[in-house]
Image (cartoon, rainbow, N blue to C red; front, side):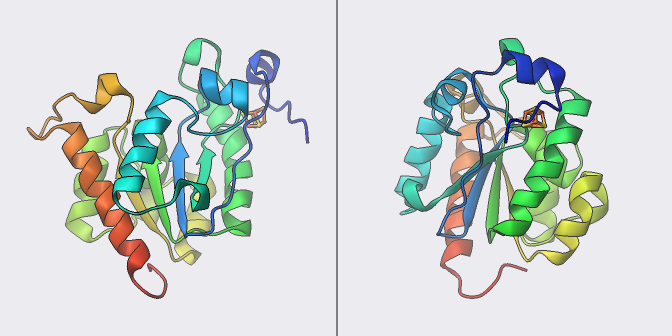
Length: 201
Ligand code: SF4
């Protein structure tokens, strides 16, 4: 399939970065391909992906068994954030992918991915909402309209994870914790949920 729904992205990309279903029940979801992803055709191929792979390995989660995807599949020029129209167009493809290969746990990496599932543009708000209500709960009404029907029916935990790029990872979050600490806690929680038997609903 050669998708050209987003005129700018389809002109600028080297290739579409297709999602890959995992076998361990985990899906890691990033905002958009960057330079390495665009070059290799693999999500999380760059240095922020390396940090994520290390974190997962510390928790005994095998990268080769982990599903990967992005909110938009084509690299935006100059790594700008994808526009609302581009997100809208590509979310339909993500929805199809999630329906075909439903994960048990989704780690959403960065602000945009968390906002799509949890509603707030501020990552810490989404994290605190998740912590207040239990990781398996999602406020489906706040999720992006394309995903509401899917989330209402899919037994899956959504865990926001801070951006793993070194510049963002080592900064302090507004609650006084380091983003890296919060990130490690979220990955540990994902590992615990994956170890639990049955679904995550
Ligand atoms: S970002 Fe998604 S919808 Fe837009 S052109 Fe690429 S594959 Fe198609």
